[in-house]
Image (cartoon, rainbow, N blue to C red; front, top):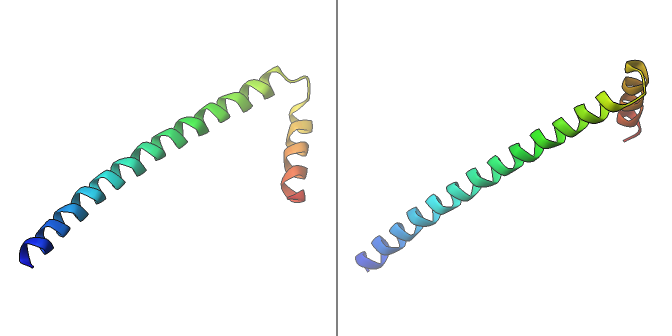
Length: 66
């Protein structure tokens, strides 16, 4: 029984380490995705013919409609 408990504990430790690594990998990917989206928004705003006020109004209105 003692050996089964020790093996189960070892398995939990290995599984937790794998889980933590997977969560870390996911967070890095989500951070990269967010950075790319931010760059895309900046590029779209820069290339837009809309004024700053028009863009802010659009974003603010969209925010209140949600």
